[in-house]
Length: 225
Image 1: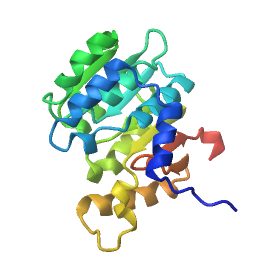
Image 2 (image 1 turned 90 degrees about the vertical axis):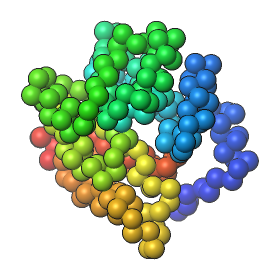
Image 3 (image 1 turned 45 degrees about the vertical axis):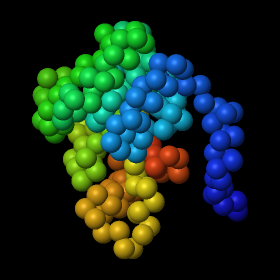
């Protein structure tokens, strides 16, 4: 049985040169974000952003929910995948960082499809369930407070329709998940979350060893359970 291929710096560069289609608007936003404190660590890799666009387009997604906006690189990638007439709801605890991305959303011509919600994500998700009802989203991307992933996950399962796709970022958490000495709250939370999803009979899932770990979760129909 073939094992997971380790990625050398050279192989990583080859993959980027052979597959990445990052345009000038995305590149400018990524470079602007990289100048912020911990900016490079907090934003998604461009390859991951491209994958998000592909996955959301395959759904195809008319309604997308993003939990954790930061400077909006992933927001832009997802907005570009929306089906005609679609809408993306993205939420963050502060507008400090999303306002950086707003300029680039406008440049890309997708600002009118993005609904930015500022405040505690749990409150935003409760409001979405109450106002729009369950099963109203096609695609959910979670990249926010790691210790609250289980709560975001449950809300996402409520909000996503049958066969809807949930994508969760940072599920390898800088590789710390396999370090027995890493017992900080975020790492232990990610370990617990990974076990939760693995054992959840309501979904199909796969943890993909890309970037910082990306877990793909497909909600089953009730007849499949």
